[in-house]
Amino acid sequence: MSGVHRPKKHLGQNFLINPYVQQRIIQSCAFKQEDTVVEIGPGQGALSCLIAPLVRRLICVEADRDLIAPLGLSLPSSVEIIQADFLKWDMGHLPNRIKVIGNIPYYISTPIIEKLITERIKVSEAFLTVQKEFQERLTAKPGGKDFGSLTCFAEYYADIKMLFKINHASFKPAPKVDSAFIRLSMRSFKEKAEDEDFLFKLTQTAFSQRRKTIVNALKGLVPSQKLEKEILLLGLSVTARAENLSVLDYVALSNKLVL
Ligand code: SAM
Image (tube, rainbow, N blue to C red; front, side, top):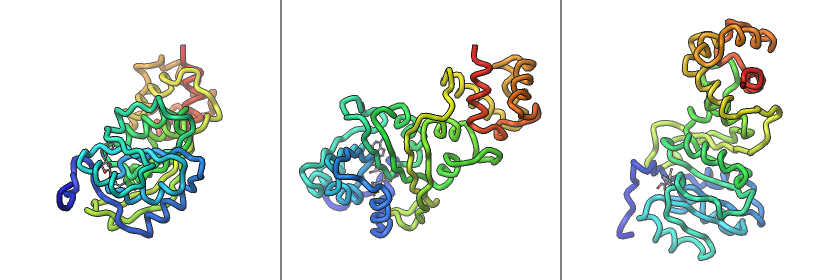
């Protein structure tokens, strides 16, 4: 890299410059010596250089070609640096139960979480810095405006914990909004959906018309009479809206309605 790196907005480059927050992130992850860790978007290596001495194997996946050579110069030679779009990167060769960390670009937070969940045999835990509003949607409880199909999808596959808030001034350039550091621990949900595709079709359809009652919103998908009957059997009201049902309710409902 010649001269100073100019942050690229289209790659969501807001570098974490606050050393106190960097340390807090590393402490919260509590990586172990035997861990294999994948870092999404190492940037200038602020977190990578702290992680490298703690773990067995660190693999950094960075999309920006201009950052690869400087990362190679600043990180220990044991760190594997890969130039790739994480969303397209094949994780097939990795061992199972790796850990993932990333201060990830806001605009690809949803596809990154979808990929981590799809790869849940490989990934046991993920530590992510996301936009505060996005975290609120991920960890929302039923009944509020933030509770939606993303919450249901994420909660079904992972236990998600908000660890701490990060002020926007901790980044350079500083974004307009604050962030949150979260942990996703992959799990098996307490009740299994017989057909997971149907479960998420149900939640997406219900939340796409969240102002309607759930019976009206799901009319195109399931006969209203059958739906009303199953809603009452679940102990819910036929005037309930999408946000009034918990993930557990959606699993139970989808198991009753799936053909
Ligand atoms: N980890 C660094 C830090 O905390 O300072 C950088 C964080 S910055 C918010 C996001 C990083 O992700 C940038 O280095 C950017 O180039 C990289 N990035 C953006 N899209 C990516 C993708 N699809 N795959 C891998 N890296 C990506």
